[in-house]
Amino acid sequence: MLDRNLMKTAAVIVAAGRGLRAKSGSDGPKQFAPIGVETVLAKSIAAFEAHEEVSIIQPVIHAEDRNRYDAAVPRHDRIAAPVAGGKTRQESVYAGLAALAKADVARVLIHDAARPFVDQQTISDVLNAVEPGICALPAFPQADTLKRVDGDGYVVETIPRQNLYCAQTPQGFRFDEIFAAHEMLRKSGRNDCSDDAQVAELAGLRVRVVPSPAANVKLTTAGDLQSARASAGASAPDIRTGNGYDVHILVPGDGMMLCGVKIPFDRRLEGHSDADVGLHALTDALLGALALDDIGAHFPPGDEQWRGAASDRFLRHAADLVAGAGGLITNLDVTLLCETPKLAPYRQAMRAKIAGIAGVEVERVSVKATTSEGLGFVGRSEGIAAIATATILVRPRPSSKGE
Ligand code: MG
View 1 (cartoon, protein in one colour):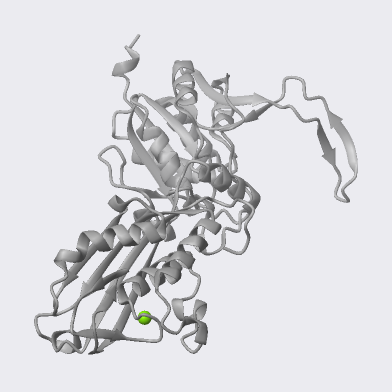
View 2 (cartoon, rainbow, N blue to C red; view 1 turned 60 degrees about the vertical axis):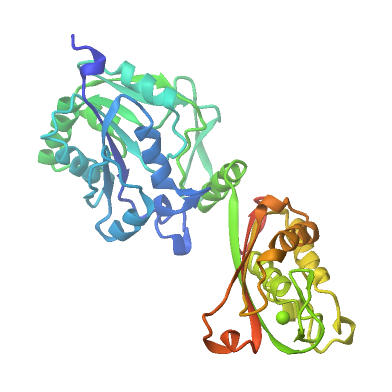
């Protein structure tokens, strides 16, 4: 008998379905819907990529989904170019097997992309159960009582659940055996098998059940996707970024506020508040990350109470909104566009001030300054501009709707 480690093993990932039951909307078919930081399909492929015995992964997709596939799945040596599936699941699996026909594969796992939570142990257990003439089917005992119902929704029969199992994937086979079984069925004109264990059964192969966890769930409905997102959200970060831009005019005066620091200068910045462009841009960046309008909507310029106001309160307000949304500020970066005076001497004080107002560590705050080489309003010292970026982490809210 061949050493298992010398047996080349492939995984066919079936992702050609239209997934109409899940109605994932703009995400398209459910295998391309995101859960956590990746799509259902990418997560399924990653499970096989992580398994040391799998040397080729053969995705099968719908011909119309090539762009979606390219955007969703990272390139990797072990992932073969996807092939187009057929009209039924059985035809799609055949297309994947046919693509592997010349790859000298000894064993093949056939997996539905819609089961992204398959674990490494299940993959190992399935592979270990495959022998000549014997296929492996991961399954778990049926726990709920089964009822057969008539067309009007009335129970007509209770089916004893003893010895009943719920079939999952990946199902494992000797490549030559399952490829021959599929070819046999094709020649007979049958193309409606809902899994490959059935193809094997019809070809006279024996199918051995391997206990598998119920967590290896198939995402079928919109509700399945939602709960998968909720559980993925517990570990995957929801990272959001916002930008902000502001300009204020320079007029004769006795110094200006920039990023909360008083800069001695023979001019000042004109504005309704203290006209601190740096803090205004940072405030808009945080509001942008939260998708909560802009600084003008929160603090209308015509409102008397903001006349001459220190801009600390604007940034503090935005930081409070982040906290209120269950968020955490992970980065604040602002670039000041200013011809004179030189701002470098104030940079550390500005960073410390911003960190204090926003309630973050100073290591997460960046202040940069640049001139515009004499060009434009900045170059003519008519005003100062600021550009800011904020990054926040938002705690997932599984129950939230309409997002
Ligand atoms: Mg402003």
